[in-house]
Image 1 (spheres, helix red, strand yellow):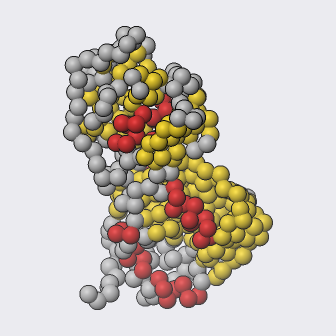
Image 2 (image 1 turned 180 degrees about the horizontal axis):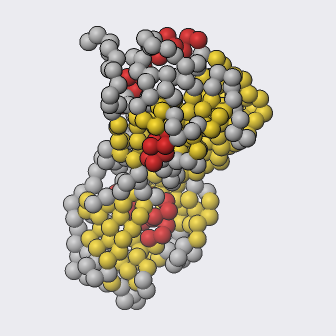
Length: 366
């Protein structure tokens, strides 16, 4: 599932040379983003080994709005989830209010503000490859080249009572160090943190799950966040989700979410192992066991999935909790957050592993 960043990438732009007063610059002939050429006017240049890009033209290509303040002599580029402030002749910029040191000063050439590539990479979470021989600058968003959400089975199967484990935890960990799910027979809630898988049972205790256990449904990936934000509470679950909404840009892709902090209150749940013939998930959860935690440090692990993915995935927010001492947690139902650090990673690929050798459940009538 490739990301389409705000809907437009346009045709290739080439120049034969770039000449700026007082600069002995190497031209950049082509700029591409995720393998597709984009048009920049004016074009970037390379001087002293530093790739310099026109701030306004580049950020507008990324769907940002750019404003110039004559009073502060500062340009402000506003992207979904990031705001960049920088002025000419400055060796530092700001990304979301935090100072960012530049490899070379930003330059004003004929009324156009140029910024070094390192600022562009940090603000937009890009990887870059500059070929000085061909004059080609290749940019790619982190995650498009390979980070993938790996999912065991479709969510509708779980909803309809497919609780037989189809993949071992050992195999699952080969596809990610971060995630959530459940276990064979719907036997508790799964949380994976830093490559370790935990099972929260109906006694409210988190146990480390052996590799031999199996799962009927799980979502995992190798977590590589590209956004981070500190939150100061108190925040309810709804208010936390509103903060997360502000960090999520493109609503057509998936996001991995990690929230680490102090919880004044958290309400979680787990469920006991079901017996065949299995009930539906809704019926099984009528007997769920709920837990209330007070004044604990912990981490939320989870995902946001786009609305169109419902049925294949669980659309919207899906969060599980594990306390910092790794002793308790479960599927998150409610919270009051005192303070936290939020980390988010956009995810552009979904690898759906369909169960094999499992008796299929009967889905709802069409």
